[in-house]
Length: 240
Image (cartoon, rainbow, N blue to C red; front, side):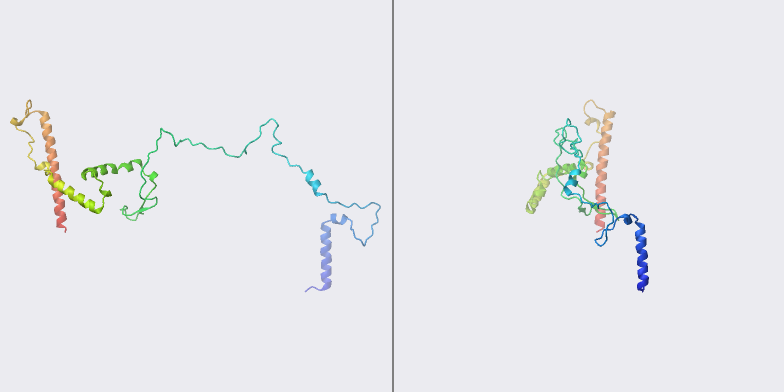
């Protein structure tokens, strides 16, 4: 601990150093009621300015006053962006909008069973606008073909009983029709005999040879398709 004498000496030194740093404070007169003033000049006291005079002295320049009187007044701020006009008109008759049926799968839906590659993520459905335009017309031909086979009736809109009744009806209709004999099982005269030739044609005619060659190739293709079908059937039955 510091004794009282050392403490007083230390405080006096600090006080002297603090006063010596600010010599302007020493020039100010010390006003105290206990001290007499030995000067012939009257003492001037500082009076604080009134708040009204300070406000009147300050003038704020106006933005409108900087413009000449002949200039037109600004109806809107300068930094307001101008409206952007789109170049594509949605109601343009030259560019008609094609209406498409919306897909049943929403965007982001996982399509299970379509990914056949190992260690690959599942296929995810996209937005309708991301698909190419030709993709929407792929099933048009299959729908027409199915309608022609089923007698022009939409089977998907039928109930289970109606679908079963329609299947029996189509089976009876198929039995009533004559059997279609394959081309390789038919008796076709590839190169006709001279007595079967039409008038004005001979066996040495080039067109007759080309027709016989095309007929022979059709019979060969039909026979090969039948053999492949029988081989697949026998392999399937052998694997059971």
